[in-house]
Length: 159
Length: 291
Image 1 (cartoon, rainbow over the protein chains, first blue to last red):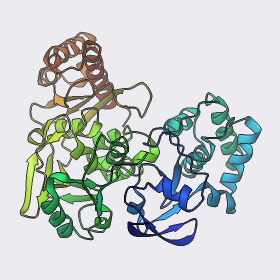
Image 2: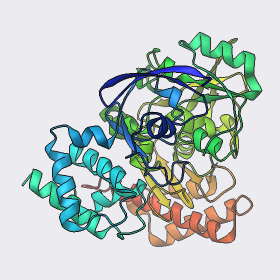
Image 3: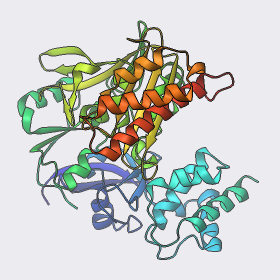
Image 4: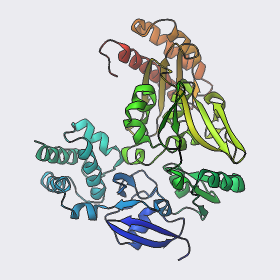
């Protein structure tokens, strides 16, 4: 493939690829690296389904040209869920217990968003939870069960 | 979605970036956080022939974060929204900007998008141009030929139009330290994080031209000042802003913005936003008010 060399860290592994300039980070993560927790809904930064961590904070994979990630560190839900992390484990369990997902399309991104929220705000109010979720579109749950699940996870982690 | 093809350049220093810009000028777009440019490219509303990625310039002095200069706060163009929202010095010296940063889009976009990107885009629905106009800030621009400093009122020329030439890059925003002793803010949108349908910033301080400044965004073709509304607010201290005065302020804003408003409903909302922003300023100024 034509393009330039992209050298970055993905889920802990030093990664080098030839990347065409017009490919997004979401394209590269899904198509080249097989990281399918990165869902592409709208493809232009509105739905939030492609949320990943870049240098430890949430960003949208579809609104980043892959080459702009040169030298940076990307983590997807695959890696966050695999590491020994009480926060993501509590969130996953609470989403199951409270019906925080139906079709599941938005779920990986919602989990990463909630994970970031509980990292800086351990006991968020329901309004703060909704504010944090303002960039993640869910078309199934009506958000109520998602907010319930995040609230329950926060309660379990910081009683 | 995939953008139209383009050539990608990633300079490693400011001089390299400015040289690339002077070579490619009109057909080049600068990529900072990319949270507007990349979606516009995905939708093919923007089709730059060359993208100059500024990611390699993050280590350059003065481009990321705050530098206090003589009586002024200088913020680098590559400073991210999320940092502005959380930095204690920005909150202390330019609280209107820190507050507005929390209203830019949604969290994952604020983690990526930049101050300079938003200012250079000059979207009429964006928060920062209104804050910078209200606070009478200055923009620092650079090209391969040198640098210059432009007042906000001369920089923002219209919707998506600024005084920056194709070969110029925005380096920093400068605002007089503690320019305002009080601010108020209101944004009306369908959901938090959506584009503003109408918004207003009101600032007050002895060092500001006229003592009170009002800027409106979202409702009008371009971000603009509302000097008649500001004059009415300057006549009395915030503690004495009665309902009758605020009604008159909203009416004055509607009258002076009528030709610029996108439609009659937006014009009405602009009046509402100005009124609520003034109320917000008064509430913050009151003893025990929110900071």
